[in-house]
Length: 158
Image 1: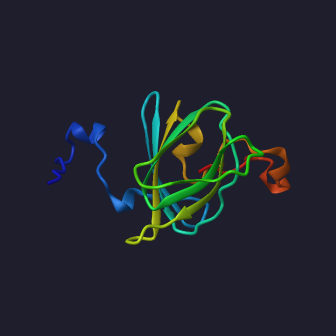
Image 2: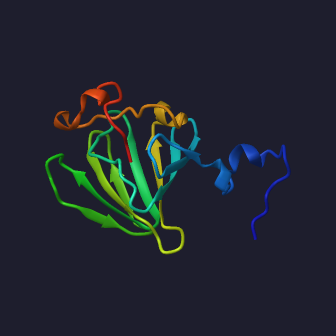
């Protein structure tokens, strides 16, 4: 049984309960997220529609990323930018992308119940661009994949 604290409780500062309305739409269709930021790390809880697109190879210059798949499946690439090998992660499986490790080109496979892929990403240090759902992601993409309209943002993560 889950107990939700009274309004104004000290645990409100430290505990974040599952609340569907707390997930915010992003600029990419089918991507919703909830971000919780601490002093030295950050959790991004992604709820991504099965079949959603918009992920491409990228790397983080100054952040480590650890992800765990909670629902559905993540079919993606990780490692060298020109390595076409794909890896499929299922619920409970984890990936680690240290800074400057290429990852992305993801296919999100929805689960049978909600047709969603849930991924928990932990970043260290926290990313300022994740604090606002409408912010342009700060990542590095391979030069040959950057379109003129992407020059500002340098890409999209996840």
